[in-house]
Each structure stands twice: as structure tokens, then as C-alpha cells.
Image (cartoon, rainbow, N blue to C red; front, side, top):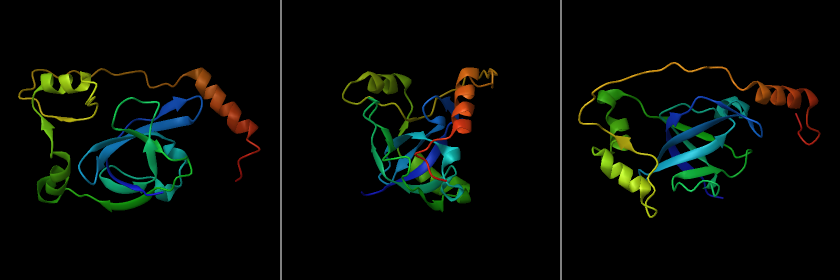
Length: 167
């Protein structure tokens, strides 16, 4: 199976999943400059040498995520899919290389972006948006505790073990 090369630009804060324990959503750009979302990734469970950083190229076996209607959504072929870490895109020359990749398509009009998101033939769900003016910025602190029931389920599963998993 061919691998997909992705420049990682987004990694979400981990969320608790009753099925997969802890997951992150990752997004970035393919070599041809298109956005791609990779979910689910059991980030802390993958081998340390496969734990990629933001602004690093990776290669991974991906398939379209059929449970997600958004065109940019893919998932690893399997949880055993190897992730090969590649080169890191640095910030030299005022972030020139990153800008070349990330700023290839920038939206300046929110209405255009919303129209594309609503258009069933386009369904844009990931984009770079540059506002003409920032009027206000509000940050609200959120509760950082995870759901107790999900945490108990994960703890119980770890203590019980799985006879089909090998160390």
C-alpha cells in the first residue's frame, strides 16, 4: 500500500475515547498543497520514534475516513500503520519554507469560506484564513479534567489486559 506524505501543521490536545483510550486529531498538507485531516491517532501509544512534531514531514498509510463526510478526512490504514518521520521545516528566512506550503491558498473573505463549507460539491472544512482586521480576541479557560467514567473504563481495561495483545 502506498504511503501519503504529510507536513504536520496541527495537533489537537488529546481527547478521551471509550473505544481507543486517548486520541489526537492531526492535520497538515500533502505534497501537492492540499489540506488533510488524520483521525484517529492514538499518539501516546505509538512508538516513541514515530511520535512526530508539528512542521515535520511524515509518511503513513492512509485511507479515506468513510465515517466522516468532510473531503479532507482520512484515517490510518490500521493502528499498526508505521509512521516514518521525515525532515523538519524550520523557520529560517522569516519562515519562508513554511509560508510557501501553508500560505499557498489563503482565504480573506469569511463569506466565501462559509459558502464553500456549505456547498455539497466542495465541503471545505480546513483552510487558512487571514482576516482583514482583528476587532477583538477573547480567550476562555476551560475545565481540563477528563470524563470520569471514560477514565475508569480505560483504567479497568488496562488492569484487565487483553489476551489478544502481545507485549
